[in-house]
Image 1: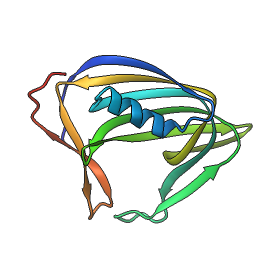
Image 2: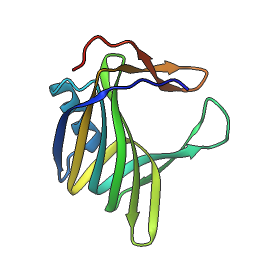
Image 3: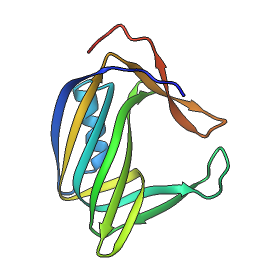
Image 4: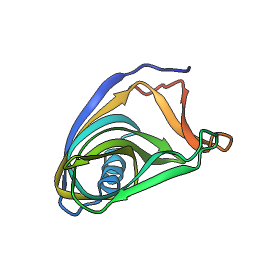
Length: 151
């Protein structure tokens, strides 16, 4: 295990409106506000989304299993924002339910808001972390380095 420590910096509350693509909007906000390291939670509803719900087999690198929904689901989610290749990368896991059905996974691709999503973002200061692709693992994992900028 590797780790680093920091402090909470700016705090943002964002409203993502009906029809907006959640992941696109979060990425835009991160660029506008120069958010390099953050964690966030969200709640609301999504009308369509694509999720990675696990690997097809327990091997590395993984071959992802995909699921999607095209009807409204209530969602809660937790995620983070770190840079990858100099751009903000959103990593978001959601639990989405409709009636007695639930879907849990890593949201990727299209993610259309239904009515509204509320997002609570906490910037993390005093750290330097970014996602770097590791071909042997098949994904971009966090890497830490010393940070001179406290935010």
